[in-house]
Image 1 (cartoon, helix red, strand yellow):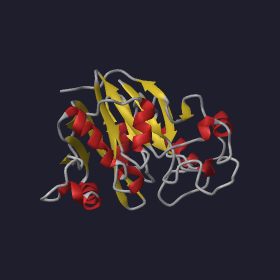
Image 2 (cartoon, one colour):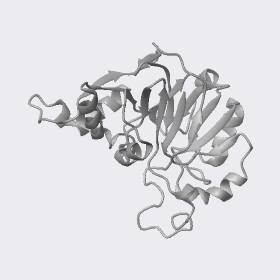
Image 3 (cartoon, helix red, strand yellow):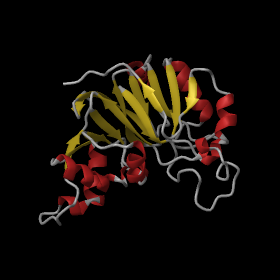
Length: 259
């Protein structure tokens, strides 16, 4: 199984439009971040986690030619605004696209993409096969996915465990019960917005404390803003088993269970 980070930036991306801070002006490609998204690949199957506004650019850069399912963590636009791009895979694969999310996110998809669910649909609109995610494990594109809930301020957000991978973004609170379920993963992906505290995201210190408690083999921090600081400087101060993820980074893991 391979995890590829398609984007590792926060909702504004990095650089931020109009900003002249040292991070936004950096010439280091590691300081260039599209909106947060990832793709999990195994045995020819590919499952996308989040479909943000940079989806087209991300999939072209990664050379993605097949997509079996989409997992959505929550309804914010930096995580669903690119979903129209599945039209290309509808055409290539001649089938609808599985989209897995909680009830609130599916409601947002129906609202934002109302034209895809109209009675008299315009030819070529995305063909979305919506699946509501509850508490039980499910199959997405043939891969076994174990969902769990975290809180983004007061908003429930889905995290996903796929084999040895645990993926959490846009979290501020993880309950003790969920921590027990995701402890000891081979790879933990966790959001870390900036150094200063934030109302709805882990900051760097909080993320590091969570990594220490959950004890993964390796942790990668994502959903990073320009307020975190320069990639090279911040990563130099991290523990050896913690890295700041960068766009395009590929991580290999043992295969996950399938159908």
